[in-house]
Image 1 (cartoon, rainbow, N blue to C red):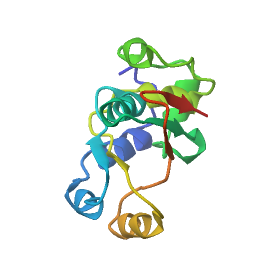
Image 2: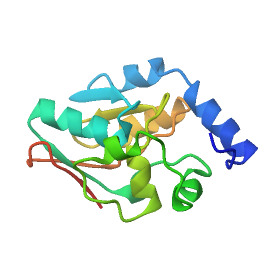
Image 3: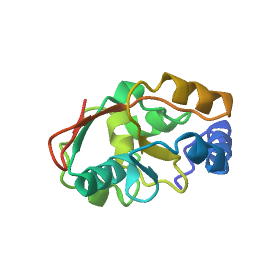
Length: 148
C-alpha cells in the first residue's frame, strides 16, 4: 500500500494468495483444529484456536514461512493499520519476523494443529505444492501464545 515492496515480491505474494486450499485441507483432515489465516494474523488465529480448545501454544519464529520481502518491509517499520489491534494482549515482538505474526492476511494459508509425528503430513503437503512447516507446539497454558 505504500509502494515500497519490490514487484517480484508482490507477484510472489499474489501467487501465494491464489493457491487453492482444497488439497491441503484434505491432507490435513486428521488435524485437531484448523483455520485459514486471515484478518487476525497468524498469532490471533492461533490464540482463538487455543481459547476454543482449552490449550495454549508456543510459536518458534524461525520455523514460520515468510513471503519474500515481508521481513525487510517489517524491519523498515511498515505495519498494517490493523497491527495495533491484532498485537493487543501479546508481548511486544522482538523481531521483524515476530511482528509479521500480527499482519492481517487476505489469504494467508492454513494453520493446523496436528497430532504426533508430522513428517508424512509435511511431505504430502510439499508434494502437493504447498509451503508447509512446523511452527511450534501446543501447551497447557490456556489461551497463552508464547512467541520465541
